[in-house]
Length: 338
Image 1: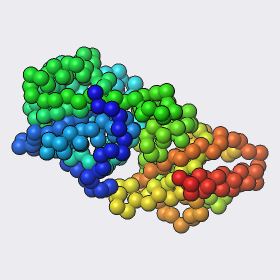
Image 2: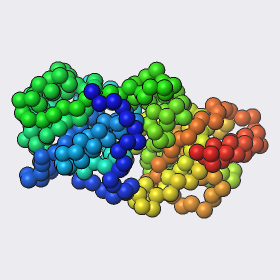
Image 3: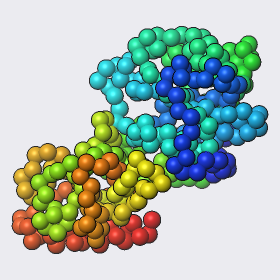
């Protein structure tokens, strides 16, 4: 079993350089393959995911073959158990960018359906790994399960590989020895930390700040009146939004154009704005010392470095302004040190 080894395989793609991206097996070129394949939802592309992907990239280089990441949309849980869709740590676009940065050559997004959920392990192997991608090696997490009712596991994959001519490389998702962590790297653990407001701890598992994305919409424009104009972000469906509170982080503009994307140090508020008796939960980001940004209608991201405090209801606007000034000072110190 391959060991979790981070920062060992350098990326062979520059950030923002697209890789091949196929939506469904019908888009895979008929003359594609053979290849090295890694499989998973990869939500968050956390450090454990990256260890799996980097092992696949290394195997691809060893064999002189392209590396393909196979993932799914929508999340399989929503199809198998409607209404159970977990909060998402990454959008499909951001996920593809993160995977590309690890050096993969293509991303295959399988449209997950009720029919696909009923495929046997053998049907999944034959249809996707053998017929579509002509896999010569398959790299997966050691706990990988697949097929109807998750009947397939690594041992079943290895047995099939022995018959069909592909190698199977399982990768441990345990944290490296010596790290202060009692958990495997897992998207479930990251989601729990984010839901609790533990964004700094989540960043440790992700290897980067957690982010949410969305379009800037008009709010009450109260922040502009108070001297702190905020971007009111209407987040994408199922986004993993941190617990209510004030955070230090970054407002990322031009996320649709990676070569132009810019990270503005920011103070971020999540909550209902109780000082003004608000009822709608919002994600609002103030780019520190910037009052000249016109972002309405643009796609942005908000990244979280650390939680500063709980959401509070203040007795006066003056008390709120005093605390906001302190929050911005703390946010600046945190982002400057990041």
